[in-house]
Length: 334
Image (cartoon, rainbow, N blue to C red; front, side, top):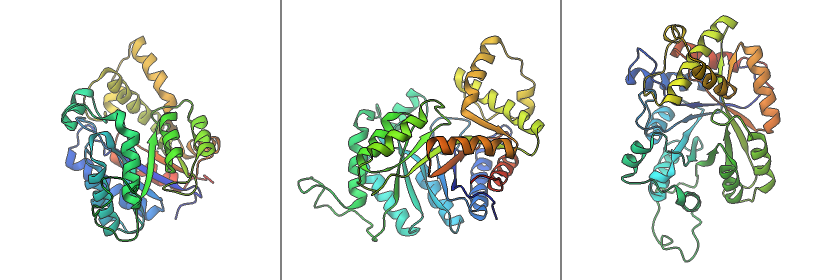
């Protein structure tokens, strides 16, 4: 059983690691979810990405069903559904069905990012994603799930199915004050993506709590999502960190490739420009031995006044990722 008393959860991007297949990546996601369930993690979220050779899951709603069926206790959800691509009605149907199949275990995390490059985003949306309509889409989706449409709404008399008496949790996922403000306005849970933006998150989370208005939820509930890798030794942590550095460099240069392994990363020689990019990206990651990681995670939890921590672990091997999840669960977080 874990020693940690912090409510820990996982965000999984289903990474395709160098030398592995998409099938390997998806199988590793199932394995990690089952491990997280046994270790006492609270939630397991699946991210949505399109057109990336490094990330295998473009349809979290499908993976949520697979993971919920493969686990026993842990909450499972999207981290998140990129709503500008989709009809709020269809998303409501999907997640009400998931809630009917796995009552009390389903989370619906929402985002507005494209989850890929702009050309791919247009292909997914069948045109330009309607990101400017996002606040209205979220409000409609929450009303549909809560069966709380206004009297004069054109959908008021339509039958939304399946209705079972329970509903999924809704989480607004964001890396700026836009997401926090919208979550506060609509009465939603909020998770700040520190792994995307290592600046200003504490202020955004405080503002969310201060401005929260009861709506879908009656009180604020906040999490912070962190990129975390725990390793048994400092040397292993340094090796895994080198692979993360190269992955971030790939992203900066638009290089579409699987997650690099340690050997590839250690063979690289970087230009001053490359090193400057790597240095600028490192604050978004927490990588080290369990003691060092726990200290940093605890400080961020306290600074964010977060109710829970969501960890994203994209390591250079699936074994290293599993070990990181185990070590974090056994750490002295409180």
